[in-house]
Image 1 (tube, rainbow, N blue to C red):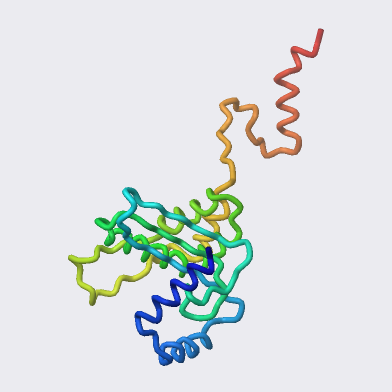
Image 2 (cartoon, rainbow, N blue to C red):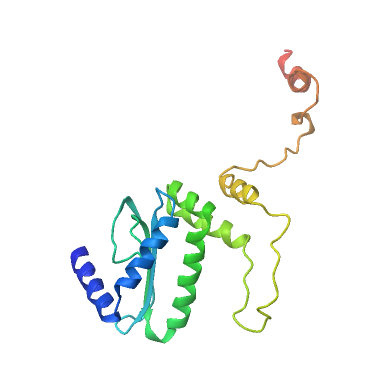
Length: 200
C-alpha cells in the first residue's frame, strides 16, 4: 500500500510541474538542517466520500525515508493526516497550520519523542496551547509587533510539562500530623496522642 501512495505522490508532483530548480533549492535548504534531524509531515484535505472528519497522528517506531512526503531528504518520524467533508476545508487548513506550529516547537518535539502513551502527547499539546497566544486572522494590525510574555521561559514550559504526573497531597486536618520542626517531633506527638491507649 505504501508503494501505491508513493507512486501516486510522484505522479502528482510531476503534474504540478516540480522542476530541477526546486530540487536544487531543496538541496541548498538541506545544508541548513542539522544532522540527525527528523521529519514530520502534515496532510489535510477535504474529500467527498466522508461525512465526518478523521484524524490520525502517527509516530513511526523507526524513522524512514519517504521523499514524496518531505521537501528535503530527512527521515520521516511523524505524520498527521486529517481528512473530512469538502464543506469544511478551511477549518482543516487551520488545523494543519496548528500542527505545523506544534512540530516546530522544540519542547513539543522532545515531549512527543519521549511520550509513552497518547495521554502524554495530549499533555504536550495542552501545555503548548496554555502558553500560546492566538491571533485572529483579521481585525488586527499586522504591522504591530507583539512582544513575547516576560514571565514564561522555555525552562518553565518544560518544567510544567514534565511535572504533570506528580500527585498533589491534601493537607491533613489533624494538627498532630503536621511538621513540628524538631527532630522526632512527629513521633513524640504521636506517642503522646496514643499513650493512653497503650497503658492497660
